Image (cartoon, rainbow, N blue to C red):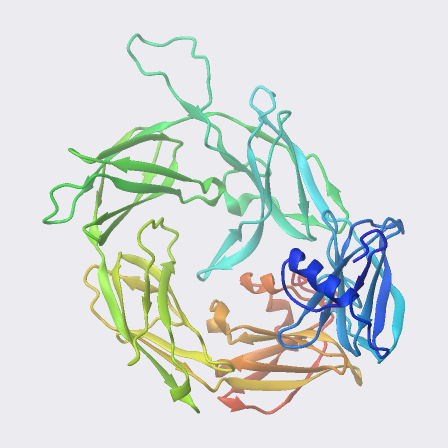
Length: 557
């Protein structure tokens, strides 16, 4: 690899840079066959100035794809030599810029395909990298003094567990002068600042002898000046746009005493320590604290800003998990009578079965659980191996909502059903109680639904991002969605969908995170094609490409 010239002899792989260099040196030692060609070009910024040290990646269209990487020189140029004939995609990236792909006007548009003939050398590829957008501002206190070390986050609107919410995004911290800057991809953002971890010193003109010193904190705040997520101002960031003066003035609020007690399980007389996670319910203040309670009285106490909290206590006793959850509203007055009762975990057992052609050749190897209710969990990982007969047992599952993961799924197969007793837990939450005894039965199938088709615009084939979206009542089940890219002939194929009712959409530009927004498809419902998929092959579909910018509703992003 010639770093100065941005040139690399072609060697395809997906490995570390160190191994990449070794592969390249090996390629240099061999005489390239005469039928090999090359790919070269230049990376420029929006003002046509060369971009040095940009990373350029060429990828095959195989499954799985393989990559080779080059860096641009001082003139922004790059080159790949010894490239065999085939079909490729080309991408460029550098910190501070939006990533770009050949043939795509934005990162939401499907990349173009490069067809390289034997011995052909193509050097016409030019990237014009667009600078990322940004949001910047200053955080000060009520006296106008700058606040350093304040956490700043850009959040995006989304959808979690059937509820509209804000999803965490890029973050930073203010410097000593209280200033911050967030580099962002184009999109819609809400900015929130959080200052929880250092107490605020305020001078009180009068204090009674023997009284404790009042403590204060700044808490959190959304732009503009609210602690409520639904009252926050949404900022629309464009490529290369600098949105400045997004400033915050934080007012210190008195911390309120919280005191409570852990109630040990029946038959347990003593434990060393109970860990307690304190989770702020208001998303504006969503910060976690840790507390603990120990013998002899198992009392916990803290000073917190007023607000709504969830307290999640957890302890492991003789290998058994115990957990308790309590929701509280902490007002301006001290709260001193909180109790959290620890409840025992239960063993969750069940069976994983496989149906369909060649089912005997496939078997799940594990079942695991992850917290689905936002409560802290610090215990032993909840994971079990699946026995040869399909049975499994996960020991000591604490009460709460749990997400289920099982695998591996057969190639071109799907997860057919999950039931806790008679309850469907594939499309609904699985809640474990201390009294839960029902088995968790999981069925996988080796024969998923296969759907293919073609995308057109007018009477011509069109490249597009194809989205298979479940019918409306299952829009919150992200595992049902499937994405595909129509090729240069407009053809697409989806091989691993669960049978059911869906709509197919072909967008000119689309980002995967859009499915987290409960309303993103509403402007395009009439343009979708309804399909009722069954296992195996289904009738091919013809889709018209949707130009999102021409729709009356909001563009998915």
